Length: 141
Figure: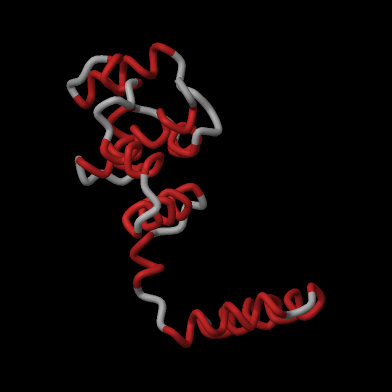
């Protein structure tokens, strides 16, 4: 089984149950960063952890590691439509620990700012980050 396929299956199940990684990890007594590696495919859970996850979702380990009935995996592997792109974006944001809610709140001006930031030199980026941190500290006082 590919690591990516298992990671996407774990992501799919967690989203199906409307759970955050934090909620699931608390229930399973796992570290959130460790679980995050499972979802991104950076690491593969050991058999005991697979069993723990399968029991939590009330499925067999075979169902957990099998991609045959996974809508999400089929979408990503066989399709190039917008839902596949949306799924890849969501998976990418989760792998970077960026809350989707935060992204959904961004305005066009926010995106324009980010695009302008990307065009800055490294020196100017560092200067802007210093200024932003200074302003944030000053704002909280």
